[in-house]
Length: 104
Image 1 (tube, rainbow, N blue to C red):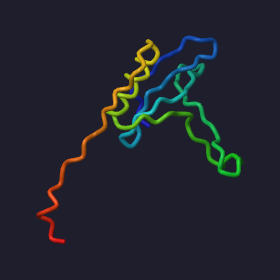
Image 2 (image 1 turned 120 degrees about the vertical axis):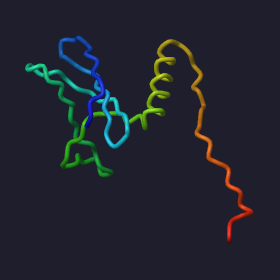
Image 3 (image 1 turned 180 degrees about the vertical axis):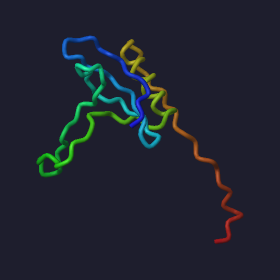
Image 4 (image 1 turned 135 degrees about the vertical axis):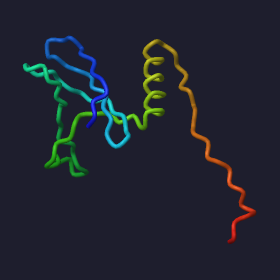
């Protein structure tokens, strides 16, 4: 995990929003500030299909995608909070392939 930035929420529980990058994927992570001032992610035990918690805990996060996609998603969320209701439908265009030159 590579912490990009933190946003303290200044509430009595010392909640923090943590922007994190792992394997080139940007995530928003729920965290708390400890008594020593260190930011620690909140950990959860996700449920499997049988509704039983897994043995291993993972950080409570929402993965937004790579940097470009994450920025677009965060802009959309900001617009939604400000009352703008249209999502920019920008999908990456695949390069066109000329099928006539393929050997099969």
